[in-house]
Amino acid sequence: MAAHRTTEYAVCALVVLALEKDGGKIQQAAALARSSGTPPKFMEQVLRLLGKGGFVVSRRGAGGGYELARAPERIRLGEVVSWMEGGTERAIGDGVPSREWKILRDKAETARRAVLEKETLLDLAEKVQQRMAVRGRGSEYQI
Image (cartoon, rainbow, N blue to C red; front, side):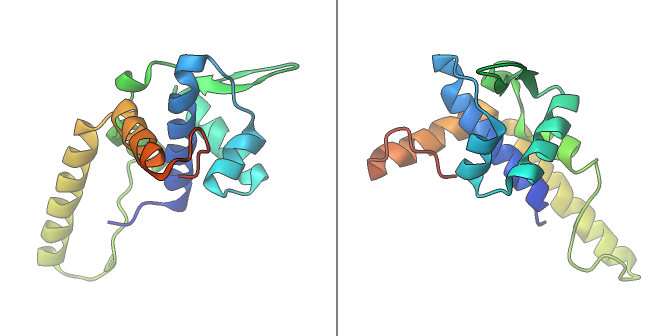
């Protein structure tokens, strides 16, 4: 099952926000876009979707930007993926008129969701932070 690129950008932005959560630092859309290699205008759209899903909140004014709407340990990656992908499935072979293919695809989707439901945003952020520490990158987020 391939993740939508929009979903990948959303997860990257959430990881950066989770890593900044302890410092209480609000991130601007442009900085989040740089961290994930996302075009800035597209990142703004992704952040609006994340806001509608209750994952981030925006702060207006000087020094404004985005921060997590709740603690990263309370955000399940499966919830993020479901929200960003609108509950739809993507798989190679869609449209193949085969009951067996549909059954197999449904099993794969169930397994994918089970894995994502076990992981929180905090789990992923900690893994990214550990990888950065091993590489000696400090707080340079490149997801």
